Image (cartoon, rainbow, N blue to C red; front, side, top):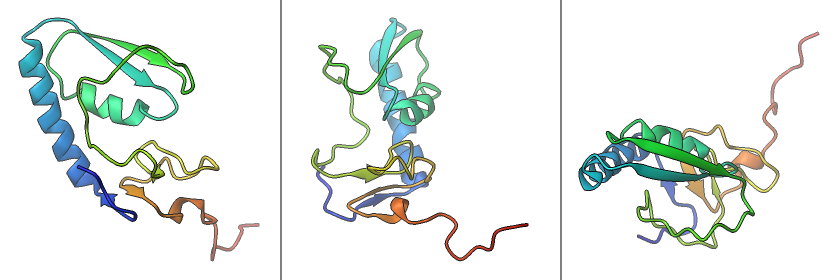
Length: 123
């Protein structure tokens, strides 16, 4: 599914999708070893939550973004337009902010706002 600018996935929707995807992967693996490939810069939060939903023996392989392994995904959590910036749930805005947001949003700059805005500094 392609999402339009300003789309949002709530924490509850992400959790429900991970549960369904984990069951699907577990069923299709039929107890065979699963190799999970994770991009450290973008996929670590999603992968951590997903692998807890999978009931199969597995080995996790981690690589940094920018590495160009010859891998193609077998499963997708959500299909989105590739030219959109997604922020939250482990994905960061261009300046590295917003990874800790519980929801996943596209096309917004909410993560780049100053986090201390309106707060007084403690002495």
